[in-house]
Structures are given as structure tokens and as C-alpha cells.
Image 1 (tube, rainbow, N blue to C red):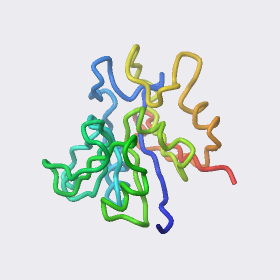
Image 2: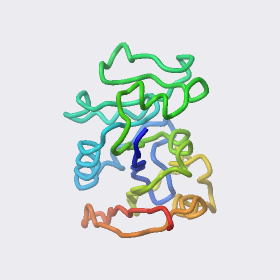
Image 3: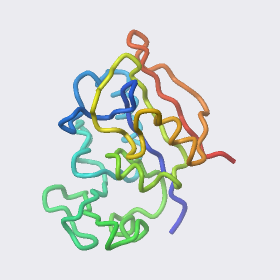
Image 4: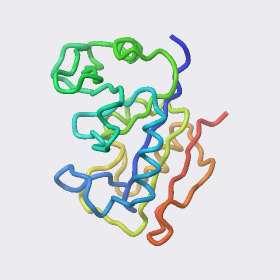
Length: 186
């Protein structure tokens, strides 16, 4: 298998949450600049990996090749509802086998969540794009990584896994929403 570039993408609240108490991304975390950044990144990805709740629901979504992480299959299976999707159970098949089943052996893989899926790649990310909505709070929401908790931010989790902030881009100035590219330390 040729080199795959692994990139993560998430927008979080000030308290590190990616969803509300019902595990749904609330409107309060949706910003036009971030949505455009995310959509453009996924348009450039060769493969998208996510859990069953993380489908991005954009106009180009049905055109994107993807792995859907699930325990509903033993290893790998075609997704009966989405022709470009492969169902993948990491307990029954390696990531490399899943990529091969999806027809991808090189290029960019975009990991878009949820928390358990993000955690699976924590030591493999080349870059993790962490968007932050600093004026949104989601008490008791779903954290972006399973180890995010009071006193442990997403930034601390990324640092603990050898990623360092490389550059920041303001996406929605009125709401101070920015994205920071966290890169693997050399």
C-alpha cells in the first residue's frame, strides 16, 4: 500500500464538545466559514472515515468514497444504502484491508468522527484540523475525543499524542471561529 495521509476534522465548542447531550451536532456549532472549509477539505479527500452518526450531509456527500465504522458487520461489507461506502468493523479487519476494500491505496484519508473513530487514529494523524467555536458551550455534551473531560482539553489530548499547533486560520471572524492545523511533530 502506498502512503496514505491521515487528516482529522472536527469543530468543537469552548468546552471541547462536538455534539449536544443527544449526540447531535447543534445549530450553535454550525458556521458558514467552517462549513466551507470542511466541505472543501472533504472534496479533496480520497477516502472519508466516520462512525454511523457522522455523515456530513453536503451536496457532494454521495460522491465521496467512505468507510463507515460499525459493529454491524464481522469485518468488511458493502454499504447497501450508499454505493461508494464500505462498512468496516475494526475488530474484524485492518485499516489497510478496509482501504483496499474501498479501492483506496494512496492519497488523503479524512477522519470526521465521532469520538471513538477519532481516537482510533490518534497516533496516525499527519494533521488534525481542530476548529474552535469559543463562544459556544455544550455542558454535558459529547466530547470530540473520549479522553476530553473537565480539566483535559482537545488541545491537551492532541499534544499528548505528538501533535503541535502549526498554523491558525480565522474562518468566521464575527464569531471568532478558527481552525488550527495540528501537525505531527518531526
